Image (tube, each protein chain N blue to C red):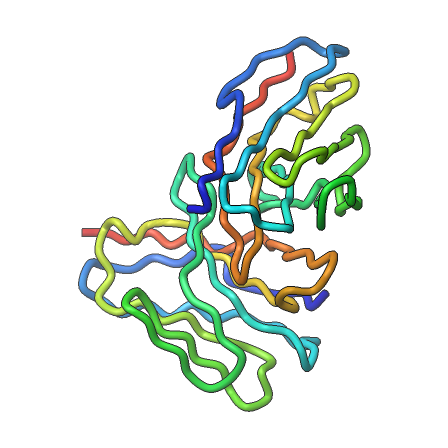
Length: 112
Length: 109
């Protein structure tokens, strides 16, 4: 399983764009990159997933360079409610015995 | 949210007692997981299942056992609870993405 490295914490202000970068130097050919968000006292929830280039949904964008050794989650115009822990995961989808390993995540604090 | 429920949601137990946590899902997902979450450690995989009666160990499986007799239920058992097993336990399923339950807060005194 590819190991991921993320910043432990980040601070931002309401209305700003936040970019959280994840390093995954030993990502395998079949691995996808997935980001999850976790609020206090709740389980993580899926934000976005991608394999290469750029993926965008109603919540965030995911930028993946050509070498796929890193990825950047971009949250546009954050609000106080985006304060949460964000996890970057790398793994193979729909593989028997698939285990998605969560690292420590990035604790984002959005200030007014 | 894949209709995942966990029971109990909170439990306090004494060292040495057996404890069983239940995870129930309504979406017929094949894969199910048990994680524990402790401050500074993110989520760590305890056991997972890839079908009825098919289970395997995760990275922190010592002291835990699991059973899956039906697709919808995945049980986590602490045979003899210890204080180091005080944690928040999350169940999850997988179908393209992981879906997590609300968590069970277990305190072992």
